[in-house]
Length: 462
Image 1 (cartoon, rainbow, N blue to C red):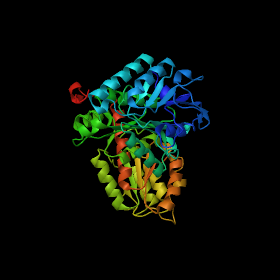
Image 2 (image 1 turned 30 degrees about the horizontal axis):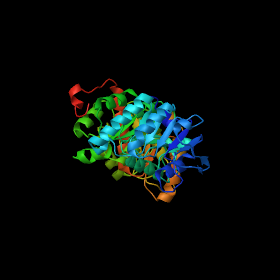
Image 3 (image 1 turned 90 degrees about the horizontal axis):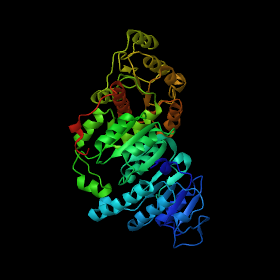
Image 4 (image 1 turned 90 degrees about the vertical axis):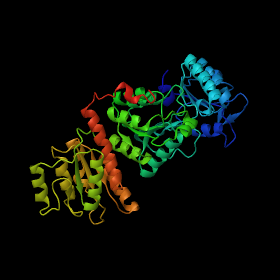
């Protein structure tokens, strides 16, 4: 079974394609015609063409290379379609229909038939009960969802148990000016689940971090071990702190297990966790856009004490260390700004000023600091210290995260210039602190690469 047939196909068949607007088979066709490769509409009951492609009666009748089938057909016929995909050497299939394992014993029986057909034909299945996936850089929109071609390309892979949450994160990324390398809704995970997706995107050159939405899994240990094994940073949003078991199981057939055990497992395997989809995206963005931190020591530079205090409080609550700066660094800072408000760490300049970038530079070069977090309200007369900070990330090989506030129509363009020089930006002090907390968690993982969890500690679903 090759997952690359799913996410990196040469040709696509849309099984159940339709010329009727509003039907799943029409919307899926409309999306995949953007793909730079052959696309074949398959429907034994249709004739003529759709989007200038001639209908084909079955996947076994396609005269050309096809790796991926989008199954836009009712659940009862899906196993037969997958059997035909195996006969046609189509190695990947997306199954949109529900009514499988999440729908009770009869649905589970149907899903078992589906898996048997996929195993026999060596077909990698995304779903069933999924809204599909997209890879923006390749203009590959393997979904029936509409208006998704505006989601920009980036370097964060979204792997979500829920397709709905996957889209929520992807559209939030678009609104934040952040791109994704891929967005995947796993659905019921018939034979492609967390482990297979994580392993694939770990080898994807477009992906620099992987963010997970987890409702539950029947192989907790496999998920944790995969997250620990891969080189690409992984961040997880584990839902189920409260009892949502019945609802989750009816959604994707998820068995949510014990929230505390999952959180403990992620912590012991060195996987940063967050408490919301916004934090998940922010953490993934920081990890994807920054050098790998060597340790959990954060240097904070702020031009306003209040946001700096909020940031410091949040960082310490998350387990970050705010070390004292070296005497040499403190002397440099005090020479730049005599009478500075606070120069130990956090460094508080009291207000934005022309020398602010020099202060950030000095803190970033401090040997006690592994990660730098900067907060500065926007002032039109000064702007941001972009020129002073250009090249600094490469010089020090440390993450530098920048947070600010100001009129959106003004700061959006200014912050984009900071992002272009390798500095992820956020528009709230807490969001920046949470993103840096993920960097801290990841740094602790690197410091203890062999940390494992005892066998009984992930027994909820392993």
